[in-house]
Image 1 (cartoon, rainbow, N blue to C red):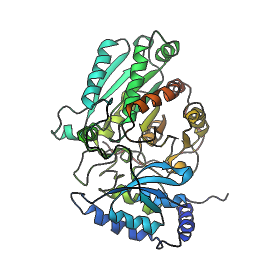
Image 2 (cartoon, rainbow, N blue to C red):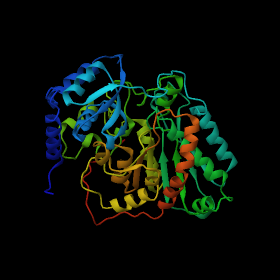
Image 3 (cartoon, helix red, strand yellow):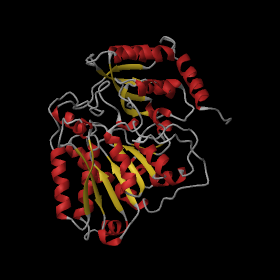
Image 4 (cartoon, one colour):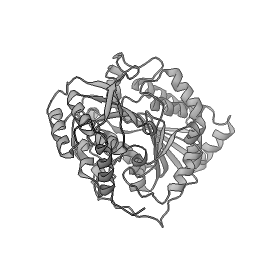
Length: 434
């Protein structure tokens, strides 16, 4: 295949897709910002919204919708389907793109009654973490690694971001795996899975030979709930809350677009249309006022300075996917075969799809998994677990039983991965001093 720029590839794919949509108005990317400016001008954001199922003919159509800031989730790229939560004005864009859609229902999202039975609140999670630190002092270090936006602004004095480190403290420095969860508030299962892993590593140390060996030779750092402010809103009944609570502009910042790694595609040659949703405070992918502008983002980034993180995974829901860097490049990174090997030996066994964000869905930047790789040379990964935002707790239990070997496999892999210094070099922008 002849080498082409991202821009030319995107434009060619978009043209083919849109030409095939005979019944839809021809899409003009220049029209889209006006649609979303009107949406963003509503200070309360109280337009009626509906959940729909989308179907597209070409991946370029999904990419254009995602880059416009739509609330997309539950994508099934192999079926060319996804769900979205849209306003009447956003329907205009879908018609312009030639994406068909029909009303749908998202399980349990219409119940403004807090958490489903079995789930921990933030307060209960904090209590459990403190109990682990007290019960297993030879294994556990619990730290408050940052304050949330609401705590920094004096509106939620108890909203701390916790990190729990688990290892045999008698055996010196070791390869370290970091797992983060709860970056998007409405995604409930990741928090529970990370807490189950913490319980497994502590309660079975000295009894289970595999876990004992891992904790003697590895360290695991867990941040079970990064977006505490948003999660507490979910607990109050705002089931759809995704972003943090920095409402200085719009209704919050998408923390998983706020990291200091090609934030807003800085330093990359991409179509300007890819930045629309990132710049729209009302869009669900709004990236904030600057790279790492949010205290929650800063807390995660600081862990790479606190610890020598060899590997990391940011856990989201949902869609059963396994991601590796970079989210916006078509050229494979030098370590791609190592990532594929980890994938094949872990989540591929559960039927998860594997690849970069661009390969599986659409281009992303400023993400947690790109940050670890770009800034610190860590083997950073991402995942989408489960098949809904609010699975029953019995489903979470089944998910844990199925994926337990993969979490332990990631811990083992943290000591075997190595940075390739002979391959591609990646342009990065200057640090922003946050």
